[in-house]
Length: 139
Image 1 (tube, rainbow, N blue to C red):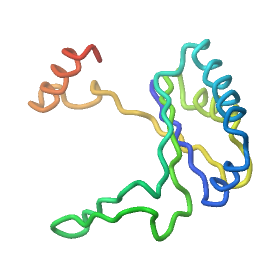
Image 2 (cartoon, helix red, strand yellow):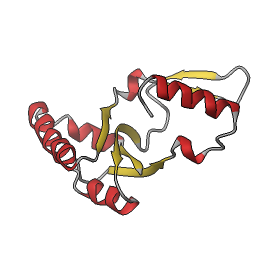
Image 3 (cartoon, one colour):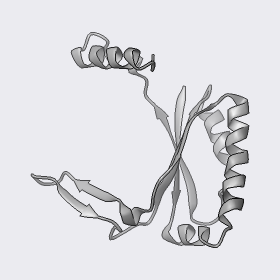
Image 4 (spheres, helix red, strand yellow):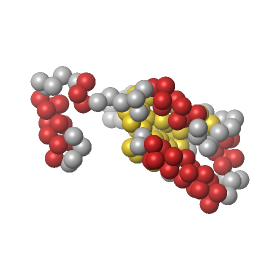
């Protein structure tokens, strides 16, 4: 099963990261990622750029409204994510608990990634997606 660990932090927690030596942080996270690579569970790991450079597309109206960052309320911003291929949610939780990025204001949200096999296989769009996945080596 695949699980996504979504790293979240408050504005204050992100600000604290600015006080940490960049090379030290890269090495710390690198060691954590290496553990998951050795265990064979890491599928993907990506950080996200500053929210100040992002945009929000709000679909509450027609046409959708696009708002540049930084956002009005940023109680907890997503800072990056990992995709893990593990046996259970409990195993994903155990990996998240080992995160080197900890402290007040830091959290990891864990969500199962649904697989294409869970959708009705007789659906035209599911068949097209399966073809695309097969053609790109994702199946």
